[in-house]
Image 1: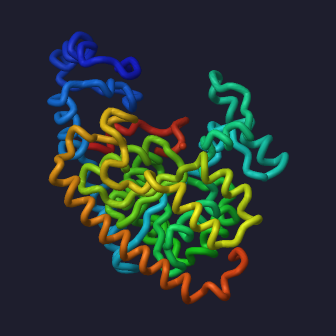
Image 2 (image 1 turned 180 degrees about the vertical axis):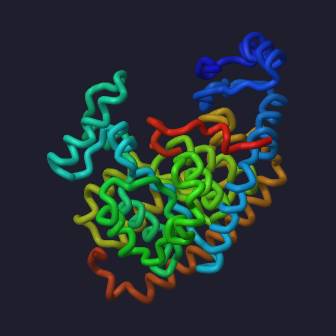
Length: 350
């Protein structure tokens, strides 16, 4: 069944429940955003029990996901997970331009024609409005400005990145310890997953969820769901780029010193770091901000933990600035695509 977007509980009672009673099982397609944000508190809490406790990946996915996490922990006790949406269909859908000349315009325009309802793209407008996914270089610059050093280990969760290794090169120059499911596991280990994009995405989801810091280059469904889940389970650091303000800063970055750039990045990212009370109750999508399910006591404990983490990060950043201020005068050198992907429902169990 396909339900209307953001519909009320009454619709489920009158249309979905009779089918469920008759068939004993219902598959709801295109389910994201299909339930209204404005529900009674008891229903919202039930929603959280389903999202964060009842819903499970199948055993084979859970086991492989845990193995990837273990191998990341063997590389480093702490690691960052980056959800890098930079596949060709994602870029085509966004209507953004990334400097690849006529080749990029032709390739992405052809892909964009799959969506008949999309307006004619205006790349400059999309970028000004903060709707363009950050490039790998922009993500790297943001992380460095936030205080993460060259020795940090990054797990990159993505599909087939448009531009391949050339696209990832700037990020790898800033963070050489770059990993992915393909580098952590053999082709044989990934064989039962690699033909299904939804299964590969599920493996990335598990690693991102278990990471010490999660960062995305976009504000798509997977990033929002992970943000809500990490908030629900104790406000684990979750960095969402303030793309609208960061875009102007990236455009002007060659006209300022690194110290000024980094300071402005930290200012722009206030309110986008996954801290408690960052989102106001009722604002945004529920799966990104499940406020009715979060107790005040857990909020207080999370604030204490994050304050301690932030103080440590600030001290580390200041120490690096003191050590390198004389040398560092100049710059150092859309869930995956939906089209043609198999059904996701088989990847979960309850």
